[in-house]
Amino acid sequence: MTQAYVVRFVGGPLDGRVDSHAKPPETPRQTVTHVHLHGGPKIVHHYDLQYAVEYGCEYRLRVEDEDEPAS
Image 1 (tube, rainbow, N blue to C red):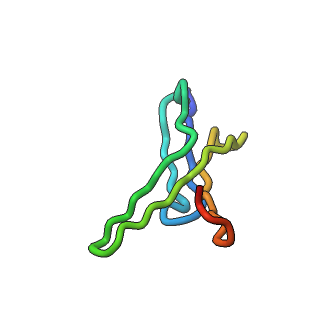
Image 2: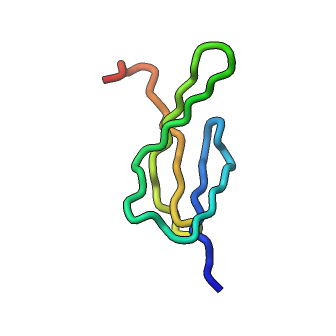
């Protein structure tokens, strides 16, 4: 029996989402961008890759510091 490679999302609108893959990707994306369109202004969230022993890897919501200007 093979165990699925699990990718979890933590924080933001994708919080709690779990994707299962047959095997880990050879080169996982370092950042996943989620764009939410809801009839108003688009809302963009960035999730950064972090490894988790229990799950394979997880993408955590990037929290922008409101006091620092974006570069």
